[in-house]
Length: 314
Image (cartoon, rainbow, N blue to C red; front, top):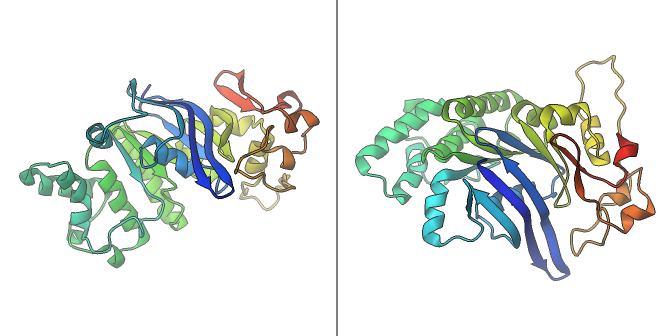
């Protein structure tokens, strides 16, 4: 096991109260595997990744990396940790410094970690070749490149310190479909070559099925379903998961797919009321759902669901 998260919480204080962005999330990721995290915008996916990497401080819970508790670390320990844990951001344009060249962006982590100067140029060339960036672009600026090349710079920057764990925060959502496939295949090839472990955050269910070994479904800061990828798509159990999967388009004009349209209003993530947070939009909701929060329980090996009506919705 490379990473374990136990009851992780991240609350933001607002004038109206505490916003529960991540609330009691637990999972493990084995070395060399990919954990996909899906859900609607605002469900806490990106916040979860940033808390694990200590880009945001956690409110509660535990984070273990390589069997060590990294929930609270000193600045010196964090610098060492950041060599092993990196992130690829969603928007390659806003996440790259427009005043830096390709070479300067990729070598910045090496300079910060005081890598010997004679090794830096060699490492930059190696990374550019690894991610498919032509050497002629070494002195180019981000605005001179297309989205696919900019994202390759982001991948190279994340890889340059030879990490073992990378948070991929919607790394292809800002790209054209054809370019998306190139970046996804690049990430999969790198995973095989280097034994990388990914936390792959996305709202694209077709993408997450292709890249993930296991998938977590989040709703308003909580996990509502966790399962091996194949099992989740064969037997989606939580009503929210079923609704998400019903929205995936099918490339067949003769196939009439039944859509599950969610009705009702989203519950507020600020000081949430007791009970299931999906109850107001759930067709199976009962009085119990509004009174008691469902526990994440195992219904088959590796398949966990948080729903009072698990039996009726399978």
